[in-house]
Image (cartoon, rainbow, N blue to C red; front, side, top):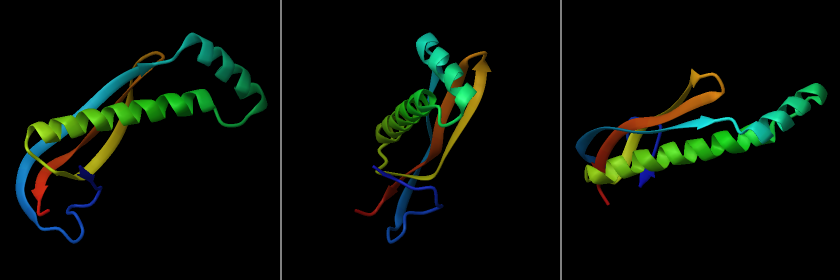
Length: 105
């Protein structure tokens, strides 16, 4: 599956638009990781536990978006975007979305 943030796939002709596709996941903080991250805020630096959690969430959301596109018969996704939002205290939603298309092989 080709995934681009642009309005077309460079060097490929778009043959057919298949429609809007999306994938999402809601991730909550793990209490053990939350404690470690809290300690890290005292000394500063990257909160690797949260970085890893959000990377996993992005991969899940993109994977679900790709499955949606495949189900529609697409071989590419254009105008792909990622967004996050807090859905409740200590939980965030990651959503990946774009336009599924069929491009020349």
